[in-house]
Length: 105
Image (cartoon, rainbow, N blue to C red; front, side):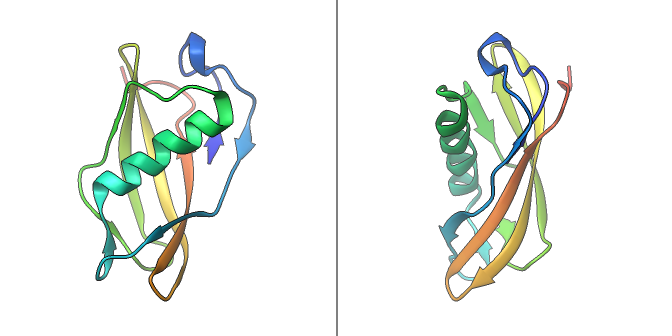
């Protein structure tokens, strides 16, 4: 997960890249709610606070290189969060998470 810039006062952190979010694959995709949960959990691990919400528009396809853009909302600011599958091994998919440098609004 790469977090840069100032998400909100609570989300001020230095640039970091975390990888290896690993989730079980159901069929050929990862459930959108599970992806959103992983994003929230990784942010909490990294900076000590979960965002107000994370939503993903659809399931994440379980193949290397697949991407999905979710929306992080915290204290009224919305950010794109790009999720990219880095590997799939059996029923486990690993992905990177990158939060946009600046808010959408």
